[in-house]
Amino acid sequence: MKEKQKSFEVKIKVPFYDLDPMQIVWHANYLNYFEIARAALFENNGIDLYSFFEKYQLIFPIIKTSTKHVLPLRHNDEIICKATLVDAYVKLIVDFEIRKSADGKICTRGRTEQVAVKIPEMEMLFSMPEEIRRAFGF
View (cartoon, rainbow, N blue to C red):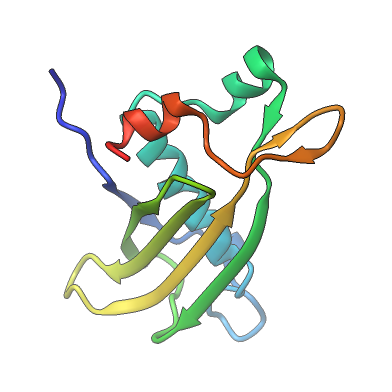
């Protein structure tokens, strides 16, 4: 049986098109890096949130984000983005850490929160599906 993992890391090389006029990564692009890591975390644990839409008419919108920028990222920086699921009871809370591969220096920390919403009613549920909680050991 595969061990449940609440954290997962992905390696990313910063592309030129993510830069702003100051030649550092534009602040909103950090959310793209978070999304890559979050999707990999869920996939690694056998969860595809899109399939919940197809099977149960559930969507999982992000309702809150926060990002703390410590060191700027630049073109061709090789980074590691770590996603850690910290809660999966009422909502999905995922913490993120971006660090440089070369020296391990932390560049960014962040968090996202997602809820389950039944459509077409657009009714927010106040618990995560059992399948998701079980996949992560909650």
